[in-house]
Image 1 (tube, one colour):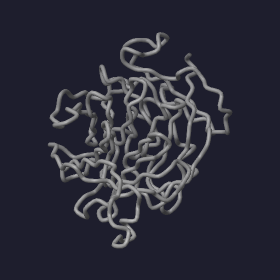
Image 2 (image 1 turned 90 degrees about the vertical axis):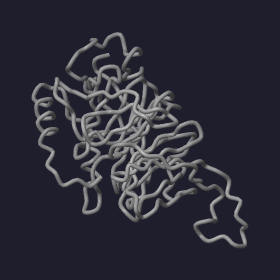
Image 3 (image 1 turned 30 degrees about the vertical axis):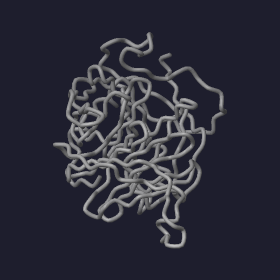
Image 4 (image 1 turned 90 degrees about the horizontal axis):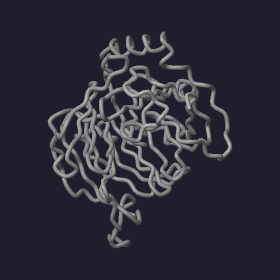
Length: 306
């Protein structure tokens, strides 16, 4: 997402949080063994019993670096999903936006679909066998299904030579800008760059409810990429290296993750902001990346409060 406005409001929030110890500086990551730790975070009805209900002060989560994988440095990452060994990624910029699938650890997509040049690709969610892609300012929402490519090999172009293809099944509309998107299995949840998250019908996209995200009673603006995990909504904050974990029942930020040490590794003339979160349901780890980053990092989270 390219924005020129200053991030005054979120800077104030983060400074206040840092001053009170809410956002602990990230530990420098190091390689970790595969031993699994107890669940580091939970929200809503499944929240860990040691957490204080209604507490306005988020708990900082630390992490150990389990592994890192290559990431295309021309991929302006918007949405990230891990599913059955594959990364599904939506990328942005006009004329460069695409939906791509590739095995974790590989650079070249085995399946990809370029979006129309009029679209600036944004967030991504998986609903059953469909992939739902937001676009930035158009309000259009694109639904794709992964299907086997049946094009005659003798007439295929390079772009048609993939074994599978993303087939566009529907184009829908929402009433706001599209930034981040995720699903809890019963609703889609979208962000629009404000402090609001909108829960939407899985099929029609009609709004069902809206929550305002807050930390220490201050709205958290510029919510971007989203990921649902352990009853929490994980969110990148545009222009920040902090990930917030939001309780969907009341909009309170329950946990924070500081990715500044990882972002520092990626800083160069091309690399952009931290963006992209994917939860690994197979081992409980979290995958993170950024726009034009060279790596995807796998993190094992831990909570000192437990």
